[in-house]
Image 1 (tube, rainbow, N blue to C red):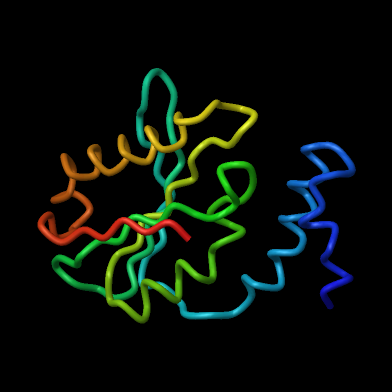
Image 2: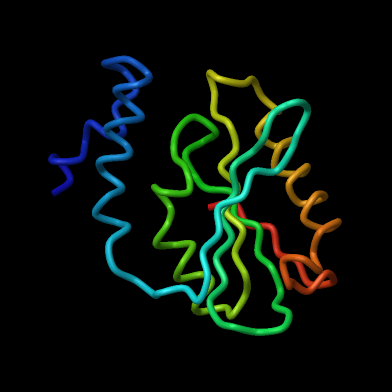
Length: 145
């Protein structure tokens, strides 16, 4: 199986788009099955004249839940909420927390540290609308995986 997915991590051949496509293909096997969420909502959070996509995963119906902000892996070069969907769902189910996956923009679309600034902006924005999302304002866990 390792040889089958080796192209997903080959940064020496092919274009950037081909590398990202191979990574997305490799991650498909990691995202099947897993816990079902009570609620999954796609949001667009405003930031500096454009929007940052986020995915809110609520594992159970509850008045308020703590929140985990999830910044997916991929070295700010590849990956998204779809490539890390299963780990986000498992994190939500096992922790009992709302998970907000931040689908920050990647290099080369933006330059460092824009992706980190987008993540910070999402956290601040969610803090201002926390009652609407039914999350606990005082319990936050940022996580980069």
